[in-house]
Image 1: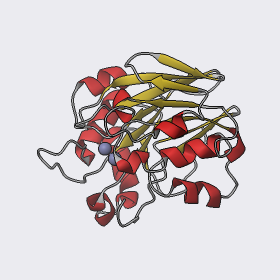
Image 2: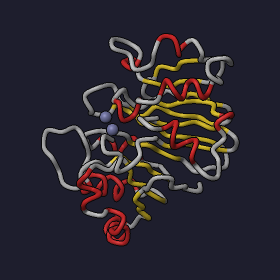
Image 3: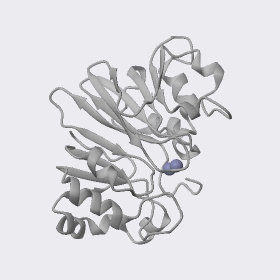
Length: 238
Ligand SMILES: [Zn+2]
Ligand SMILES: [Zn+2]
């Protein structure tokens, strides 16, 4: 995030006319305005914040203004953990007033955004309240997102039956005591879940130094799954 070797602008979902952004970190407003083809900024329906850390929440207030036409149109939903709103909140009091709805994430609960259902995943092990999700919508595959977390076996139980898995992999090699996943742990999860496609994202320096994008074939052989390494501006057709 600090050096912006990779952008910290989160993930934009466009599913049958429903638009939401996940984890709008610093620079999101710049990236979403530069993207070609243009993103439908006027039709942003929701913002999903997996956790309060700055690399995920830096532009959350800015994106609330995007969704509400600078605060002039009361609309849209923010989904976030409770601790994003409490002591030292990352969502300002004044921007909350622009929103139509705030949904506080509770594991296992499904939230409806138009024709899309977002089910909050199990709590991650990451030092603050952190939740991924599974997306259910007619005529699209099940899309899951595992955000920042330390590896723990229960991840596999919850995220099985996923068609497209988006998984945050910060470290190339295991670093003890830091609540992030490394590549071998992520590949173990992918091998166990066997999604149709797995997208690795949220790379730290060691993933870039080891040129993770050159290892897709190797990862496919290891897991039996179509594993791809995300890059800035990548589009995945679902
Ligand atoms: Zn984090
Ligand atoms: Zn992070």
